[in-house]
Structures are given as structure tokens and as C-alpha cells.
Length: 293
Image (cartoon, rainbow, N blue to C red; front, side, top):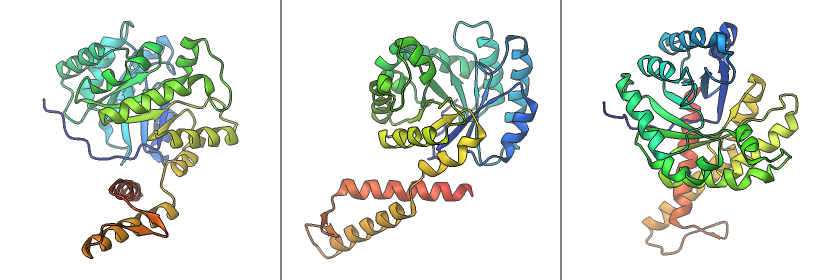
């Protein structure tokens, strides 16, 4: 089945929700979140896996989540639940199937083949979780492996564990890994999401880490608590000042071109085509976010 072309979608806030929890699935319908990951993996106990799978697929097919992007995170390759998860999720047709611990381009191609065998519709993308040293070192190959792959998702908790590193504010131990993932995603033209912040009571720490992710170039951040959503939406959206500046850059450039000027300046600063491209992206992002309201 042909893969449908991605239109730009904001993914500022991407919230994990345990699919075994009926109340959580219901609450998700009211949250101002850009995307949901209905989890069948870490948030679900072994004896609840099958029930969670059924609930996640029913939620996807309900059509009750409005403009939110709805994805399902299945259990990983090699687990006893993986094949049944992937088959059921593919048939349900979520916006994406999220797979943990993807480590190679060959794994991506195998997952895509399995999705197609399960009847996954063209709009269902594959989101690959990058959470091991091997995945980080092969992130570009993973990101380029299939047109169906739409997003890299950082699994920072597992990455710390695999590296034998300790968390500290500023994330010095994994900054190289984060930057390599962003580089790979941008080179391949796919989205990339920052990992979770574990201390749901530390609003100040979360805000600082969200700003760090935005500065690094992430499209948004994965979340573990609804209370983190609004902060994330604000951090990863263009500010009113940035939107106004983008419009000014575009207007100045177009005016100079119409007048045949070879050099364009705005407020004493040189404007080149790369600045105009960035300005157009800012406006497109702001418009896409406004359309969600």
C-alpha cells in the first residue's frame, strides 16, 4: 500500500498514556496535547497486555480524539507480545506505531514489512525509538531506512541505563546522543522527539529541559504526566515576537527583490534566503498550531 505524504503536524507535546487504564484513555480526549502514545509496553503489566492491546485499538478506531495524533507503542522485537501487538495495531490503523529499541535499518525494513502484512493503511507511520548506543550510532541509517518512518523518539531513560551514566541537570552525559539523533532526523527529513522528564513535581527542572530540547532542534518532547503538556506546548511554539519578526523578514526580502536590490537588510541586519526559509517555517508552524485550536 502506498505511504501517504506527511503534512506538517505540530508535535510539541506527546503524552504516554497506559492503554490498560480506562480512565486515562478517557481523560486523554480532553487534554490540549498534540499527540498521544497509547502504551502497551512499560506502562502495562504482563497480565494486562492483551486487554491493553484491545483497548488501544478500540481507542484508535473510536474517532473520539479529535485533532490529536494518536499512536500505539507496541512491545519490542523479540518480546512475546510483539507480533500480536504489531498485527493488531497495524489493522487498527493509528497515526503511527511506536516501536521501542529499534537498532538498525534492517529492523526498520522488517517492521515496515510486518506493518504492511497486517494491513496498515498508508497514513500509519513507523516511529522508531532511539534508546541504545547502537541506535544512536546508526540513527541516520535508521531514519533513512523507509519512507514509512516518520519520527525518531528518544528513549532517554534506557539510554542512561545502557551508557551506565547518571542523570544530572543539563544532561551532559547524553548531550552527544541527543545531538546525533537530531542531526540524523534532519538529514533524513523526519521528525524527532526529546525524551521524558521523570520528576513530575519539578516544574522548574522540566521547563529548563524543555527549553534545552527546543534549543537543540527537537520538534517536541515526550511526556509522562498531563501537567507537563501546557508548558511543553508553550516552549515548542513560536512566540508572538518570533511570528512578528518572521513576517517582517519575509516582507523586507520580497520588497527588496521587487525593487531589484541585491542586498537586503532589516534593522541593520543582513537578510539572506536562509533567513527567509526559517521565517516561512516559523509562520507555517504557527499556522499549524493555530489550526489545532
